[in-house]
Each structure stands twice: as structure tokens, then as C-alpha cells.
Amino acid sequence: MQPGQGNDEQGEGVSPFLAILGSPAARFLYRRLSQAVVVMLVVVVGSFVLLQFAPGDMVDVLAGEADLTAEQMADLRARYGLDQPWPVQLLAYMGRLASFDLGYSPKLAAPVLDVLLQRMPVTLTLVALSVVISLSVGSFLGVMAARRAGSLLDMTISTATLILYATPGFVVALGLIFFLSVKMRWLPTAGLTTVGADLRGMAWLVDVARHLVMPVLALCTSYMAIYARLCRATMLEITSLDYIRTAWAKGLPERRVIFTHAFRNALLPLVTMAGLQVSALLGGAVVVETLFGLQGMGRTAFDAVMERDVNMLLGVLFVCSFAVVIVNICIDLLYVWLDPRVKVAA
Amino acid sequence: MTVRRSSLFLGRILRRPSGALAAAILLAVFLMAILASVIAPQGPWVLGGDVRLWPGQNPAFPLGTDNFGRDLLAGVLYGARVSLMVGIGAASIAASVGVVVGAVAGYYGGVLDDILMRLTDAVQTIPSFLAAIAIVGVVEPSLTSIIAAVAIVEWPMIARLVRSEVLKIKGQDFVAACRIGGTSDLSIIFRQVLPNCMSPVIVATSLIVGTAILTEAGLAFLGLGDPNAMSWGTIIGSGRSTIRSAWYIVAVPSFAILFTVLALNLMSDALNDALNPRLNQS
Image (cartoon, rainbow over all chains, first blue to last red):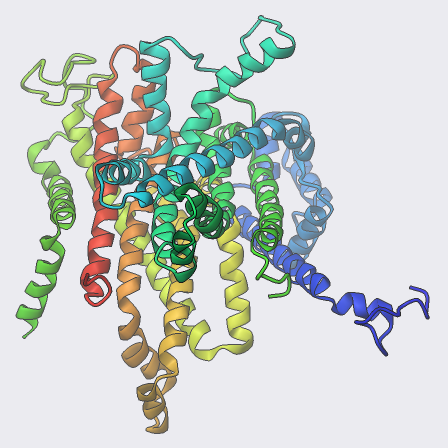
């Protein structure tokens, strides 16, 4: 920063650099980043502790593959620092993960990070589609139920969401497979594209969309139910407030009262919920990707468990936790944009 | 006095149709778990009949048999045991840890509160099912590791709840009176503060029982269940490959999960109303 440049209102008598550091935006960023660091620290230390509980270390796994002598094993342990006391090992482990070195997967013969980056798009597509669909359908159902509270429609929606909320994703998935694939023969059950079809352009997009319908639906349902119930409750709360009565009294049409006035405020708790949903979806992706044969990060985690590829398994946990941290920061920013009363530093 | 109070409490739960339904389903699940070894003394693993007998096809197997000829009724009964064990075990550990963390953070405040709440925040951010898979996958899958995994990912919810309740209560006069009277911190926390914030904890714990049952079912479905325990998720996972020809193998335990978790959710609603009678008196 050059001295003498800071003549904005904020920084009177303070150097402009300090003014920026002390600004609400910077404090907000600092607070969020320090929270992010704590989350990643807990993941890393947790993973390290977990590794101490694992039966056998990395060298034991390698020895199982390649028939090593005791001397070679001791040599390898020295090379990877596994003969060091645990605080040294923990520090080394933290250092590696801080630079996104997630280790090497002996089973896939590739660095863990490379594999995960390559498989991330499938999972991110599933997660993004699920958030958008469950949020829009769920809040629509919630608004409809709240509009005529106590009506037959309200009771139907409330009962349906109660049941959906209690149904595990894999049961929804199997139900969809049974009805939409086995009985109706409408949708393909596995993969992202039709094998050997070699489609281009629109035809390819339609093909992918058809393959994604059931996985996305299976991921959506429980949070769709949560959003619907939450949206119904907040809408009922909001519609008894004075400003809504004013809107009605002004003679505004129902559509405008509900959507422009009430729904905008009902969105806030839903947006908060979306952060939790992303976290839940990354877990649900393991089941759904495994069931529908999609090569994403969830499927990778499942394979890693089955093949005892510990580096890969903990790598998925690390990358997914990191993704949730980023999503949470984005949601905070979205919140500020949605609700002008919320200041970034609040 | 206590008899009247408890019967009043039960009456409040059973008064609502959803509360009565939930109580009936949960009672049935408990009876299934208790009577499993009476109704099906041979256990859930015996290859007793023909494979893929449909429900009702053979009176000896009222719910039919699975792909290996194992009795589905026995599977569902013993599965109730596993579900309840994991659900209640994990929820009670999560509740105990959460209560202690939340009480300490809320009562003492300051740096300790900061550290504990940051930790709570962090654990809540980590994708919980993924963490459970990692824990169970790295350590061997067993009922103990599954219960531990669920408890590890679920305690923060209780901790937050207890902390906010403690913050509300600790400013009240009776707590100040205790402190002036020289009551020790521990005694204030456990005898005065905590008993006053138990209602939301009970409601949240009953929800965690449901979450734990869903998590266990998901893990078992993926093949990460305890290999020595027949669970509803295990049956669904093994029936999945024959869903075209014998969908009932998947459907029977699926309904067991659905009804149990639904009953737990309804029960937590009913508990919420019964424990806060002033809240919903409209």
C-alpha cells in the first residue's frame, strides 16, 4: 500500500492497509477462513487418529501385495517416516495435506488427488441438480401447503413429506428402479451414457439427462421433504405478520403477496439448510453412485473401502469436507445478498 | 404424585392420533426385538426353505424367504434388534457427550466455549455419512464401530442445543442464589441447570435414534454392516440383485425401516408437544 493514497471516509488517521484489514468485509472473510481452517484441522487430525486404529499400516498393505522381507518393510517404514514418534508423524501428515498432497493410491496406481479431480464432475453435477430440484420443488410444495393450511392439499403434502423424510435414499432408489426401469422400461439403470451409442450434441445431453433422473431423484427426496415442511412452517409464521396484512390491505393480488412479500423471507431459513444438504448429499452420493454405476467420488469411496485403500478413502473425506466449507462461505455471501439487513460482519 | 404425573404425560402423547400411532409402532418394534429368539429360535441365518418363496406361499415362512432360502420373518425380527441396539446405543452416547460438552461450554463460557463450539461447528460441517463410512471402513465393521461412528457424527447437535439452553438458564436468579450459597459448579450444572433443559434434549435424542437407524441401514446396505448381525439394510442389500423377479425381499425390510423411523419422528413431535404443553395450546 502506498502512503497518502487512503483518503476514504473510513481510514482517517489510519493507514489504508489497516483500514482494509479492519473493514467488515475483511473481518467477515477472516472469520470464515479461520472457521474453514478449524474444520480442515479436525478432518486431518481425525483422519490421523483413525489411521492409528486401522489394523496394520500402509507398509503392511504393501507387504500383502508384494511379499516383502522384514528388512524391506523396516526400510519402507523409515522412508515414509512411520518409525517416528506420533507427534512427528502427525506434523508430517498435516504438512502433506496442507499442500493438498493426499498420498498415493496403490490400488489405482495414481495420486489420490488426480483420481478425485477426474471423478469430481459427476458428483458435483449430481449435488448441484439435487440442491436446485429439491429446493424449488420442496419450497413450492411448502408454499402450496401453507396457502390453504388445514385443507386436503395441505394434509396430503404434509403426510407425503413425513413419509419421504423417513425413507432412506437407497430405498427410494430401488423403488424408482423397480417402477421406472423394470416395470415401465422408461429409464436406464446404470452408467452416465448409453454404452456404445456415441451420441453428440443434443442427443448426448438427453441421454445423460435420462441416466441422471433416478440418481438425482433418489438424492433429492429427503431434503425435498425437509424444505417443504420448513417452508410451510415459515410461511405460516410470516403470513401472520403486519407487513403481510398491509400487503393484503393494499389490495395486492395473492400471487404478489405470497411470492414477492412472504416467500422472499421464507427463503432465508431454506438457504441456511442448503449448506447442510450439500454435506448430506456428498454422503448420499456414495450409495447412489454405487447403485447406479456412476464413476464419481462417492463410488470411489465405496471402492476404496472394499479394497482397503485407506489413502483414497480419507482423501475423499478431505476433499468433500473442503467442498462443504467452500459451499458454506458461498451461502453466507448469498445470505447477505438475499437479506439486505444482514451485514457481512454481523 | 409421580404416578399421576407420568400417566398425565403419557396421556398427552397418546391424545394425538399421530402420537398413539407412533407409540403403537415403537411398541411393536420393541416386541419384535424381544421376541425374536422366541418366534424364530433358529436365528436369522439358517437356510431353512426353498429360495425366493413369496410371502404367503408357504405357511412356515409367512414373509417368504430370500435368495438363499433364509426366513425373511426371522431376518426382520432380528433386524429390529440390530436397529434398536444401534439406534439407542448411538443416541445415548451422542446425547451424553453432547450434554457434557454443551453444559461446559455454556456454563463456563470464554475461551473454553470458543474452542468447544469451533470443534462442534467443524464436526457438523464434515459430511456425516461419509465420515461414518470412513470410520467403519478403516476400523473393522462391527456393531461397536457403527455405534461409535454414528455417535461421533451426531453429538454436535445436542451440544449446541444444550449450550443455548444453559445460556438461557444460567442467568436466572435461582442459579445466582446457588452460587452465592456456595454450591459447587458441578452440582449447579448437574442438579440445577441440566434438569431444566432436558425437554429439548429428549426430543432431539429421539430424532437421533431415527438418524442412527437410517445410517446403520445405509452402511449395512453397502456391505459395511456387522458381518455377524442380520440387519434390515443387509437384507435389502442382498435382495437388490433380484429386484426384478423377487421385489418383496427388498420391500419387506424397507417397510420395517420406513415405519420405525416414521414412528420415531412422530414420537419426537408428540414428545415436543407433551413436554411443552404451553407451546401449542391453540
